[in-house]
Each structure stands twice: as structure tokens, then as C-alpha cells.
Length: 626
Image (cartoon, rainbow, N blue to C red):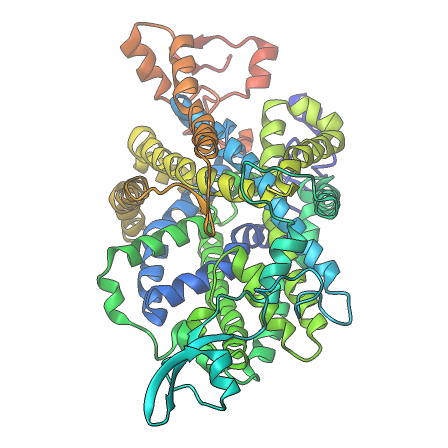
């Protein structure tokens, strides 16, 4: 019979103990939860959140951050987890729920593809620094042969005021020292110098060119690190969730061990308290909460940190068993993600505080975000510690693991999409297809390991990981709540997790129907109004570079109207009837397995079974043969 034929067609992705023998399920709840935590907790938790907290009022920033978690992050996270689990489908096929919006799923997958290309380049940077840490003296700990005259470990005074024969004079520092004079406090001007770690990052690691116009050569050691990172990803995913679900026990948990080690070490250093006070202590500024920018930063950080609207949450949740409690999972993963961000800030700022102390600079001058924190400021701070190669190794190993488990989920999103579209091909050729995806993305990423590579990484991040995701999220929540029906969606969730009280759903209704879409629209409009052309440090992008960025974002979102038009064209009736039919769930929308459909979805028949038995369709609904 049909069920037995399905069981004969299972692949390495499935096992006999799985509920879904065709698609497979997670081997255990732990595999799923750690994969979700690994996907949500990424590099941004370490290199963006602490900086935002410091910049936006310290401890006071946790108030808008927590509110935005409850109002925007968690509602979207819960929605996507429920959606994937209910239908057991990836981010494109799940839009059987609303065929008109299938382009939203395509947009999510394309953006995830762009992100996968440059995210692995960042992992390659971490690998390069990891290997560079295996030296008795860290190569960025001092101004070695590659440095220029602007390289210095300490601040250099250029001129100042001093007292000479009872009069105050202003002179250059060499004159002051040659005459045994002393600078008056607060009058010193400093030369423009660069830390050794900054010059090492630009001159040695990146071999950075002057701008996007100057592509230069492929940096061979970064290309090899990129190849290695793709080999690790391919090896972890060759059996899909059955293999990646085991790898994440290490890649998702061990970063917490390293963070704890770094925090304990940092807390014992001189100046650590100053760093932590800048981060979240007495320097907190509650008046910052009056600024709209602070609330925008909190909402944006929550939105991107939880990885909503990338398609990955839907893909990972699609391998859950139907009656899994996705509600408690969403709460647990979201809280873990946010606690990790706060915890990472203590580890980062305690060591930056020590760096400020030994370099005799205020903490504000050594704090950076993004690449500058990960590959300049923090390595510089670590190089000043005893046994610095050990601490450097631990830090970059942590970055490597944080990046890898996010990358696992991103690639799993792509392979899940392929599986849903070509299930028979994926059954027979899972390993070659997975490896093929990794090889293709490796070659596409080679532009990012040229001497202009960092400009390409920054450009893709600036455009693709911004508005495209916001547009997809806004359309996703509008489509599901306002067109498919929020109450109907709640009934679907109750089929999985059981009936809940009206009081239970009150909060989620408030968020889904009003608060979350309004917040998302506000973030989207704000980001469009405050758009500025991309820059990398002080380097401006050429006009054609910005044009390429716009082309990338257009390529990502253009599929939303294209898919909608194609669906309308293929529908029957006049234009109004066609649009209405495309705004109804497809005939095969519902729980994947027949045993989970109940009375509400008893009319649904598998599309595969429908073809075999030629079941007639009437007015868009499938009727079972008696």
C-alpha cells in the first residue's frame, strides 16, 4: 500500500524510528534545540550586541531590548517554528498556505544563499587567525617587518603645552623632552597611530586593497581557509539533520565553555571593572531611552539576532514530530539567545577594559563593533596577556564554532528547499547534492577572498541582510495573520500543542494582529529613510559598487511579485476570481502525514497520491474518492 511504499523510499535522512519516514525527523529533541540555538546564536551576539549596549546607555539598553524581544522577536520566532512544524515543509513549499506569497519563501532562500557565501568567508578569517595563534609570539603583538611608521603599541604625543621660564609655551614633544620639560595635563595632542593588530589585519591577513575598484589577487591562504570551512560544513551535513544534529552538541555548547573561561580570565585583570562599568554598570544612562535611535537599535538587533525571516527556522522546525511543543521551544531558544548576548558582553568588555588600562586610553577609544572588534581590538587586548597564544586560540576557536553552527542551519535551509521540490532526486543523491551546493558556494565566495574581498563581504551584508529580510518578515506576518487568518493559524497550532485558553492567546493575538507588524513596518521605513551609501571604515564605495548592492537586493525581492503574477496567470476565472483563489490555501495544504490531519484537514490528499489516482479537483479543493 501507499504507506509501505513511502517507507521503502526513505533515505539516510530518515530512520525507522522517525514519525515521517519520507522526510525524516530529528533523532532527539536535544538535536533540534541545539541546532536552533546554534542558528540563532552567532557572531552578532559577540561582536554587535555588547557594542550596541555600550553605545545606547549601558544597562538601560536592556529595557528596550527585552521589550523588543517580547513584542517583535518572540512572536515571529514562534510563528515560523509553528509554520514549519505544522506542514513539515521548507521555506518555499510551506507557502502552500498562501500561494500568492510563495515569492516570500523564494526571497528568504536567495538571501540565505547570499549570506551563506559571505558568512563562510568570515569563518575563513577566524580559521586563519586560529592557525596564526599557534606561534610562541602572536604575529600581531608588535610592529614587525610588515608595519609602517604609523604602527605603535602606545599613544605617541605630538605636541603639548609646558611651562618654560614662568611662561606657558606650546611646542612639539621632541622639544619638550629634549629640554626636560613636562607636559601640562590635558594639553597633549597625540599622533595618529595604529595598533599592530590593525595593521596586521589590513596588511597581512587581508592584504587589503585601496577599494572595491582594485580587486587585486586572490589571497591564497584565505582561499585555503575558505575551502577548509566549506569542507567542514559539507562533512557535517552529508547526512542532513542526522549528522548535523550530532555535530551541534559540540559546536553549540563549547562556545559557552570558552566564553566562561574568557570571562573568568578577564575578571582577574587590572582595568576589567572599568570595562564592565562602561558596558553595563554605573555608566548606564537612562535618559538614552528618550531617543528613538535606541529603540530602533534594540528592535533591529533582536530581529537579526534571532534569525527570523531567513527561512532557517521554518526549515529546521519542519523536521520536528507533529505534536512537539514548539511554544516552549521558541521561549527557550529566544531567552537563551538573549542571555548569551548579555553574557558575551561581560567577557568582551572585561578584557577590553584591561587593554584600555595598559594602553593608557579611555575604554571608549578601544571599543569597536563587527570586524574591528573581532579581528583588531580583541586580538590586540589578548596579545597583551600572559600566555597570549592560548587566549587567542580560545577566542578564535569560539568564533569558528559560533559561525559554523549558524552556517550549518543556513545550508540545511537550502538543501531542505531542494528536498521539498525534488524529493526523489534528493533521496538518491543527498550527499552529491549537498557537496555540490558547498562547492558552488565556495567558488562564488572566491571574490570575497581577493584583496578587495572585505569590501564585497561588507557590501553583501549591507544590502542583502537588511531590507530584503525586513520586507519578507512584513509580508510573512501580513499574509499569515490577515489573509490566511490569525484565528485559523491559532487553530492549526492547537492541533499540534493542544487547546489553550483565550487568556493564553491574548498576548499572541495582540502581537500578531497589531504590535509586531507595526514595529516591523517602523523599522523598515526607518531603515529606508536613514539609508546611507555603504562604506568600509573611511573607504567610500564607488557608484557602481552601490549599484551592484541595489541589484542584489532587487534580485532577492523581485521574486515576490514574479511568483504572485505567475500564480495569478495559472489560476482560472476572471482576474478577481484568480486573485481570490491564490489567497486561499492550496489543495494540498495541511499536516504532512495523514494521521495528523484530523477532521479539519480530512479533505487533503498528498499531491503524489493525487497524481497516482488522478483524483479530480473542483474549485481548488481536492475531494477524496469514495
